Image (cartoon, rainbow, N blue to C red):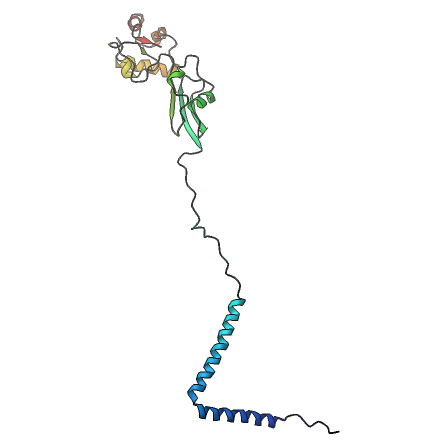
Length: 219
């Protein structure tokens, strides 16, 4: 039995590569150098395209990021504050400055102030009106005329000495600018006049002057 011969040696392999190179050179001489280079370029392009396709299919899906903060819709500002500051004055138990929730009505404000006084004219005020920030509500007493509408001696109806201005008091008989200022100063210091007789405590008003005022003034 013959022993197997030795495998191809290094010199044999070199001879094979030399043969391949010789055949390739001969093929190039027969066909031409340019077509050979074009063939190699086409093969390289096919290999490169396959590589790129494999890379593309192996890449992860793109991630959609949320909108940036600058692109998010801005909140709409409200023009009406949540708390309102209003001033309640007149014939109520606790007049003053109040802070109330938005949507409060005049009737709610009067209730929060302890309710109206016994002589308050609630019909002169719209209790169903919604309040607004910075508003003033005045509750008059029964028979009280709005400020500026109090009649003088030449008009029907008496002047309320508790609410009249200095100009309106000046229209009363025997009351000039100095006595009108004195009446207002007394009213500020001591509060409203309970009766017309209290006017005698104002310096400059005596019984005779008070008698002339009775048909033109009231409290």
